Length: 66
Image (tube, rainbow, N blue to C red; front, side, top):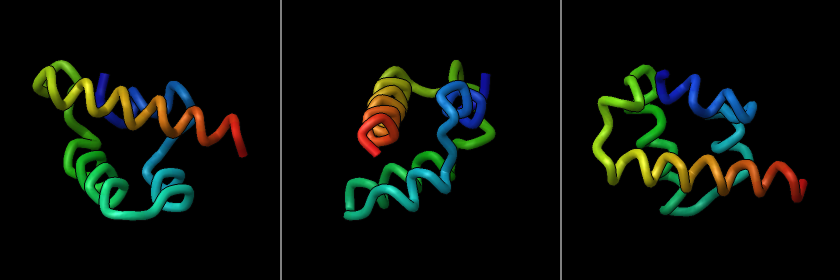
């Protein structure tokens, strides 16, 4: 499963992140997603997978709020 597919399970894409969030943290998060969009999640480090999961959780929470 790629990073793109991982996010799309919850109907999240890079445009959602770009439109819904701002600030330095989210600029870094979006850069991370962009840099790894087509990479296999299994090829990421444990720390990267953890951050990806946090990004996804925050996005789902934001979608639910909105």
